[in-house]
Amino acid sequence: MHRGKGMKFVGDSRIPATRASNIPKDYSEYPGKTEAFWPNFLLKEWLVGSVFLVGYLILTVAHPSPLERQADPTDTGYIPLPDWYFLFLYQLLKYEFASGPFNVIGAIVIPGLAFGALMLAPFMDKGPERRPFKRPLPTGFMLLALAAMIFLTWESVANHDWEAAKAQGEIREEAQFDTEADGYKIYSEASCIGCHGNAFEGGIGPSLATTDKTAEEIMDIAKNGVGTMPAGTFEGTDEELQELATFIDELTP
Image (cartoon, rainbow, N blue to C red; front, side, top):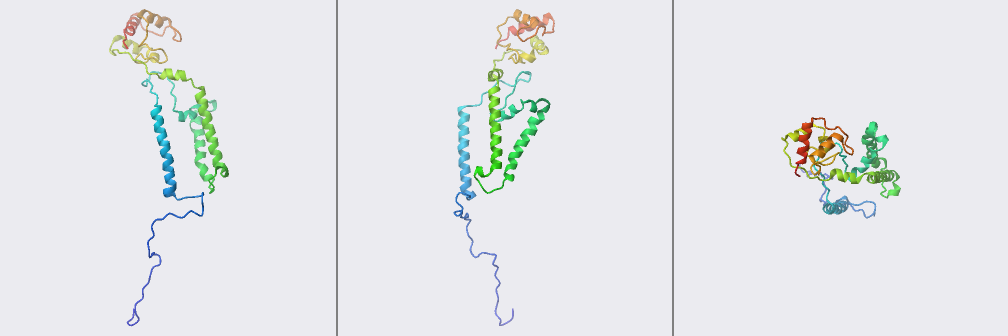
């Protein structure tokens, strides 16, 4: 600055003179194709999610999950069944090409390929269209996955023995007994516990807690067998068998 020449000011055009509020863009020129994420789109998502959430809550109150008896690690005959939303995977493992020595195919390979294809579908078709018939690739993947899940779920429900599943999971009355008694020690050391449970509640074999057999009848069954129970199952002495039969006969549920 030189004397007598005055002063000069330099302005920066990058700084706006007025500060505008955060107003969403105007999408009126593109009706039906796009909209503001906040609040338009997000509000719709919240409303739809709330409807489904309330529906699920009502369903859980109207039809609560059925309880089964306490898990018994000695019951080798119990066949677990997954929840309904996993029945299609449960059914897949029943086929020969996805079970046994090929179990890894049904448990990992096929589900991995299916879910991987669904995850890649949005990246394989990046078109701006939102109508399903103009997006054949992701629409085809979704319809194929939906059809496979419905078919496998239906097959699982139709071919499952629901009466046997209900019987194996029903809550059974357990007997009151002394675990230090000689009769229970003989019972736990013999092969009886694998079929009749550690609390006489039954498993593969019938429940002994509510049996109406006498001690003599129990001894005869242990020696000669009955139904699916083979003869000679009990390998102890006659005195031990008498002690065991008397103990079972005196059980009080």
